[in-house]
Length: 574
Ligand code: SF4
Image (tube, rainbow, N blue to C red):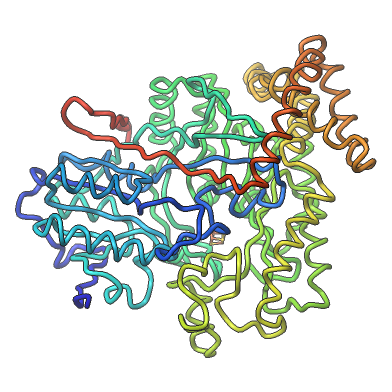
C-alpha cells in the first residue's frame, strides 16, 4: 500500500521547509541499474541509458556511437544548495542500499523519467525501511505522471524546476545567480569496438542555460514540464552573465567547446548576439553544440551562426506535413544543406506515427526524413508523454492505452505506441521504426563518416577566412581528422569493400580528401590505424552478437569532507 501524498508544485506559497535548513544531509540519486536488460523493475534492452544507441544510431551496429551522459539536473541542484550533499549517479541496487546503510541522510531526492516508475517505488520502499526518518523528494519527468502520488511512498513530488525548490526547502535564498557545475558533457564514448581515451579538454563542457521551451510543441515533455507554451526558465538571462560563466568554465576545464543544454538556445536572440559581441571582443573561438528549432535558426544569417561558433545543431524535423509553428515556411532539407555547407553538423529529429501517417505513406515519410542527409537522425514514435498537450488531447479522445494494454516501462518511444493510432494497426509501428533507422543507415552510411564529410566542408570554406577567430575555430574542429577520424574512415572503407559499392565509393572519396588535405599523418592513421580499427570492429561485432551490453559506471560526488568533488562557477556579472 502506498500512502496518498501531497503534490508540491513550484511557488512561493506553502512551500515546505526542512527543520534543519542547510544543516540537513542530502542524498540525490538517479534510479538504479543495470539498465540494458529486461527485468521486473522496468529496465528494457530496447531502452538502454545511452542517448545515441537508444534513439539515434541504434541500427548502425558496430558503427553506433555509445556513450553516457550524467544526471545534469541533479548536478545542478547539488551545486546550488549549501547543505552537505552526496550525488549518486547510475548506482546499482546494491550500491544504493550500501549508501543507505552506511550514511544517514535527512533528505533523499530521486530523479527519474517515467519508464522507471517501479524503480522509484522500490527505492522509496528501501529508504522507508533503512532510513525511516529521511524525507523523500521525487522529481524529474516522472513527477508529471497524472497519478504519481499513488505510485510510491514519498513525501514531496516536485513537478517543475528543482533547483529553486530545493533551495527554498532548505531555507536558502533564491538561487540567484545560479552556480554552474563543471560537467563533462559525455563519458565512456565507444564506437567501432574502441573506447575513446578522453584527455582533459577533449570533451565539451555542458553549459545549462535554462530549461523549457516556449514553442510548446504538443508532444514535448520538457516544454510541458517547465511551463508549456509561452514559458521557459532562463538561468542566465544576459549575454554578459552567460559569457562570464563560459569564461570561467573554459578556464577551469580547459575546454573550447560547449554542449549547450537549452531546448532552444537561439530563440533568445538578444542574449545570443550579445554573447557573440563579447566573444568577438575577447577573441573567443568557442564551438557551440546547440538545440534549436528551424524557425529560430532562420532568424540568423549563416555568417552569424558561424561567428557565434555554432558547430552542431540538434533540430526537430518532425514530419513533412506536421503543422508545428517552428517549421512553418521553412524548407528543412534546404536548411540542413546550407548548414552543412558551412560545416555545421546536424542531428535531425523525425517522428513516426503522426496522425496522418498510414502503412501506405510511411515509406514516403521515412524517405523524406532520410533525404535530409543529416549527420545523425533521431527517430521517435509519436508518444503522448504525461503532462503534454498531446497526452491531454488523446486522453479526451479516449485513445490512450491502459497499463494493462501497455506497461509503463514500455512507453519510451522506441517500441510501441501508447495510444490507438487512427491509421496504423497496433504493433506495426515497431517494425516501421526499425525500417526507418535501417533506411537511414543504408542510404546515408555511418554517422561518424558523415560528420567527417560535414567538418571537411566547413574547413574548406573557412580555413583561409580573414577573421583569425573563425580560422582558429575551424582548425580546432579538424584537429582529430588527421588521426582518429582518418583511422575511422580508413576502417569504414575496409568494412564496405565488396559489400556496398555505392557506399564504398562515397567513403573512399572522403578518405582521399582526408589524405590529400592532411598528408602523411592521415595516410599513416588511415592505413595502420584503419586496419587496427577494422580488426577491432570485427571483434566488437562478435561481442554484440553474443549479447554484450554497455552499462554506465556508478559515480559518487560529495560536496563536503575529503571526498569533495563537486565544483562549480558563479557568474560575477548580472
Ligand atoms: S521546439 Fe523543440 S524544444 Fe521547443 S517545444 Fe518544440 S520540440 Fe520542444
